[in-house]
Length: 99
Image 1 (cartoon, rainbow, N blue to C red):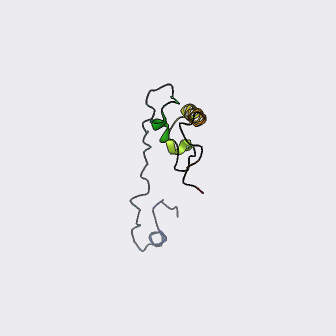
Image 2 (image 1 turned 90 degrees about the horizontal axis):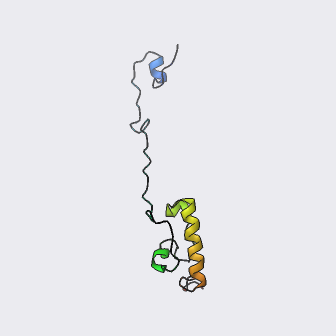
Image 3 (image 1 turned 120 degrees about the horizontal axis):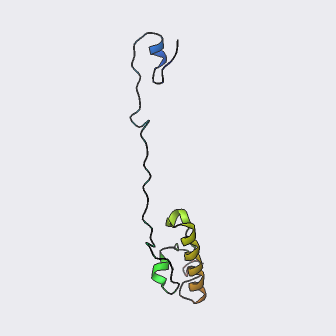
């Protein structure tokens, strides 16, 4: 006997029990496109430490792309700007409260 997808063993034996189908199965997830933090800005300014702070965690590390939601090109621009700002002492290399 051929089996249908949501047919249980009880149904195939002729007992007549209906299969319980999960309401979550078959539901398609929609991927929402996040709006870029940079917007349409083509150039990231390294002289703006307040803007660059949102791409650094509390330890002073640069956040990865999957967290920031930037494109690869934008992430490289941000990383380069953060490093320039660190050399100019606009941003810290390491958080001051770590010991």
